[in-house]
Each structure stands twice: as structure tokens, then as C-alpha cells.
Image 1 (cartoon, helix red, strand yellow):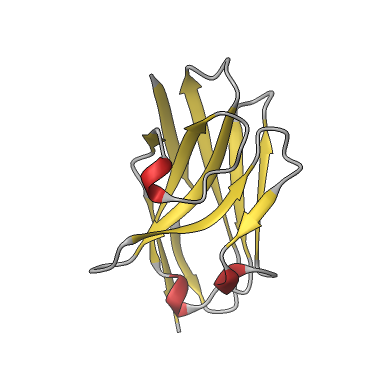
Image 2 (cartoon, rainbow, N blue to C red):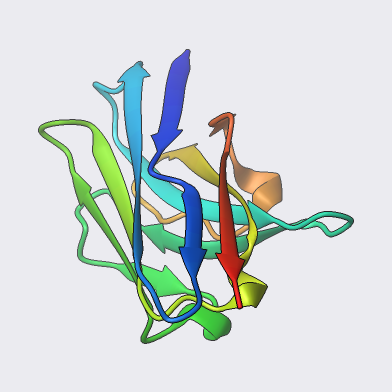
Length: 124
């Protein structure tokens, strides 16, 4: 089993910045890709960013490229999402997602474990 706990969500004005963190515990001795997904009210859970086990591969959905940065610290079992120049359309619940293996997760259907989510609200 793997437990994922997100933190760092909150209310931010458009154009501002926010940093989300995800702490992994449990079966973290194995290799895993990790990522962030988000879900707005009435919408599906969508991919935002993913990072490979080594950290060398980083992937982003088009709408956040150039604004968001995903990073990880394997020694601490932590992953981060730095959100810059946020927009009202970034408002959603953000979920940390864990996938066994070395590849970065990019599909919600391929996730092995989810965090409980953290709310991000961007005001205009």
C-alpha cells in the first residue's frame, strides 16, 4: 500500500503563485512514476503534470506548459508542483497520483494510488 498526502492548496489571485507538495509513504522502496491530476466541478479528472522515477522526464498538459513545474525528491519521497501565473481556469481539486514503474503517469486510468486531493481556487 501507498499513502499520498497533498498539501499547499488554497486561494490565490490570478497571476500569483502556489506550490503544492505530495508526501508518499508506505511502499516507496520500489520505483514509481508520479504526477498531478486535477478535477473541476462537473468535469473529468485530467492530467496536469507527470515525472519519471529518475526525474529526467517531465510532461505537462498544454494549458500549463511554461507556467507549472513538477519536481521530485526521492530521498524524501516528495513531489512538488510549482504553479506560476495561475489563471481562474486552474481552479480545481489537485490530486497526487502514483504509478508503479519508472514511467511518468499521464492517464487517470493507469494510476495505482491517489491522494485525497487539495483544493486550489484562483480568483480573478
